Image 1 (cartoon, rainbow, N blue to C red):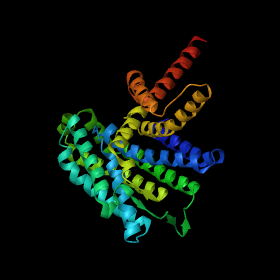
Image 2: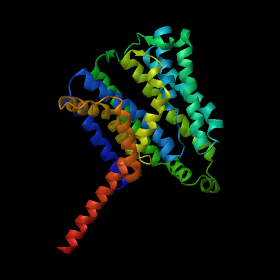
Image 3: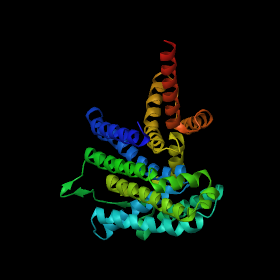
Image 4: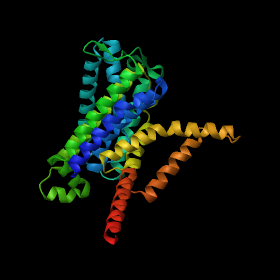
Length: 335
């Protein structure tokens, strides 16, 4: 089976899993966690295209989440526009900002690009806190309407779950097609060696700016969906630490594979609930587990994966599959 058909088969399996999970997981709380998984998955898919395939590290993608959330929040609450118009306006603003920022920032290499995007994220967060008349400051914006589709109001957690995952799946589908296209092959050559890519006629600057804008679009849509799901936004979820968490998700899952971003975002989105469950059981046994320890657990997981699985969880799964395949072949030959 070729990689293309394997990717489509995995995508169909993921879609089936998304469709049936609500039959086993009920309750607004758990459905809300799965919605956040979908939103992180969408942002991380775009970030994977930028970092894993174009070799550009960004620590400012929470800022594009914020542009998407605040853009649609302001459009719908202050100007009375529909959520879809608000999301479209936010997306245009995010892509424009990405092009303006990408021009000078993507000429930087190594840690300097990461620092530039880090600074951009800090600026957007500061503006969200300080521009009280527009963003509501620390009090945020409330009363953001839910999305309605052809007169069908998506006003429940279950409906929002299917909407967010449907858009996340579309994002994955588009990314998988992109990496198998001529553009994807150009991005891979840039990731391998920018000088070598330039020598064969690839305009590396244009490709890097375009993929930066595309990843910003993914993050903007994710932020807009977050705003309409929560019906309220404030600056706290869009701080620099969220940008770091997004990069960590991509790195843990496997930076050089779209499926790595999917696995990493889902695993780390669900991890706090798993740690909470473990903490409750420790408490029953008389051992005090504080939520502050979660940072240590995150750091430990990241350290172990970087040491033993440099290609992330997705790369580890591929190695396990290849090992099993080799074992089966050896067994058949020896039989």
